[in-house]
Image (tube, rainbow over all chains, first blue to last red; front, side):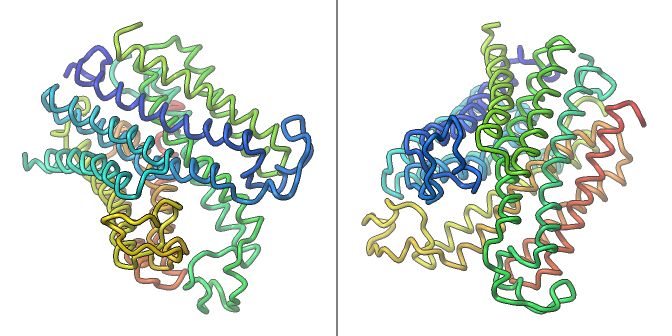
Length: 156
Length: 156
Length: 156
């Protein structure tokens, strides 16, 4: 790899996967906002039931948990627990100089597993479906991290 | 850019913005600690109401949610949902070789939006003010990420 | 440092610390899964009490908070609030070209503080023990970040 260049196929693979995951994570915030506006509720701060242009008819019940909003928050929490670690592990993994094919399988495989995990969680599929998709992503993350660790330790 | 050197103006811009955001995030933990000590409450773990030098007069009510502590926790949660993604997106954005001026506007603009978001949230300004400031930061993050994605895809 | 090479002792130090922290963070997800299976409870989504091969005898009480599961979730939340920032700060810190000895003390010291913090939290030691261990890690993080900030500002 010729330094960190977006023109390098290996680094570009990482950058594409990273950007897709960042956009996915940011989308969860926007989706929370969209659902709070649809539901006119699911707010969390006392000041959110003040009368404002965005909330012309405030009501204390707007601060109660709203399952449609909470669902997106749980999905976002799952992102927060996983994606930052993928973003760093994927970057370091590229530095081990894997084959382009393997890098694509792992990095795009992770992206696919997370998008399918979102679809399963958002549409309330059974726990087993969601857990299986999460597991695929988590194993890819562990594999890449262990590979980097062994390289940094000089083992392989 | 001559590699990842803190002496390079573009990379230094990223590093300054990143460090300010990391210090901001860490400060939220310290602020939570400070508020828990002021309030002598807002704790979360059963063992936190054992008698210790830091908690000489324990009371089960110390485990009840305390709004002054919860406010800082909500602010911190907002950081956790946003800053890690900014830290990676900003780094990749610098690799697209933007003009120094544009990089400064975006990266320092993001930092400013987050510090103002903190001020608005901490002082319980109306939701609309807080949401507007969050939106500015989020749009900067999306812009940088899309720019990197297009560069990595070879589109621009 | 000759670019970002895992063969470089300084960069390898960062990579080893980063990988250990990523594996630690991922382990918290697996530990949550393990505890939910042991307790057959502590679930969060309404669909998790559907009858499935992994949950053959569903019960609404499975959605109630379970302290053994919640403990791991609190530990994981603490990771989420700290580790992503360490992963970026440690990377930038290496670019300031510290001595290998100092880098090892700080980066491995951080790793040690987090593993001990986990041990103290997991076994419900008193708050003071846990807080002390967290403080050590947080101060290392602040030290590295301030060092990078000063270097990027051209101060030192």
